[in-house]
Length: 268
Image 1 (cartoon, rainbow, N blue to C red):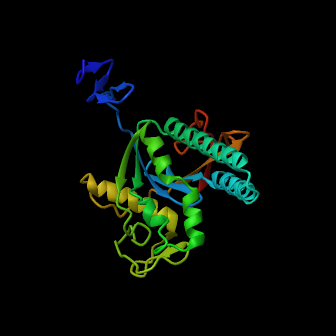
Image 2: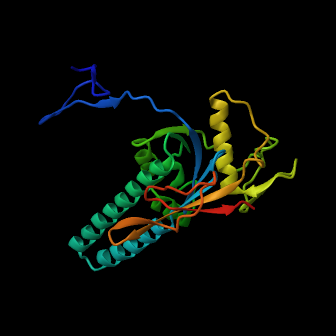
Image 3: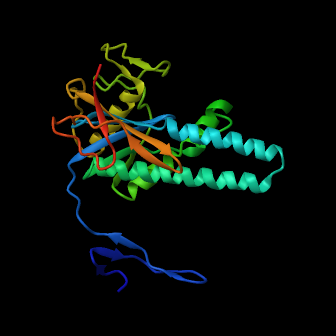
């Protein structure tokens, strides 16, 4: 029955194709939200912040390394006019990227169940614009599929987007916005607050979502920076595997990553 319920799923409008009929379904199940993680999407990492867990870093360097390797292989094949070899490398790169992103999304949603994931609303065109971005930076930006990662996580968990405006230039303590974002360390000239810019951005993304939901601004950012979780994903053969020995989780119990092991570091 179109528009009705079937096993907890709600059917949408029928889509007619030349050779088939598509009926989209949307889950109607209720999710009890227990955590909120705000993610800053960077070239080599996803840097998250959660009041419950502190800072979370997802290493994306293995993905970058894999894509650089295939860029080199494709360039050689193209220079020699080996079209079939070039297409083979294109397919392999695409498959390995898909495997990596699937493993990453599945691992994060198992490690952080019942969680809202908040991302910046990134515009790929802005990141690869010839007018606004240097060539070397454009190539690096194009290697990390932020939107694909965001979309894959949205298929498994609740995802919310916020504006990226000034997330790495705003002091979360006093609200002062600096004119530039030079250097890895943010220093507020008004109140003296200092923090790594990627961590700063994740906090500000969290605060933007909080204000969007009607929560008051918090001046207790330093009190909730209890520690860090490092999440590793590395390609092994044709598919990625997770790594790092299991350590204690932020709440003091044994970590149960469900495939993503974690290591806790004290925040500095």
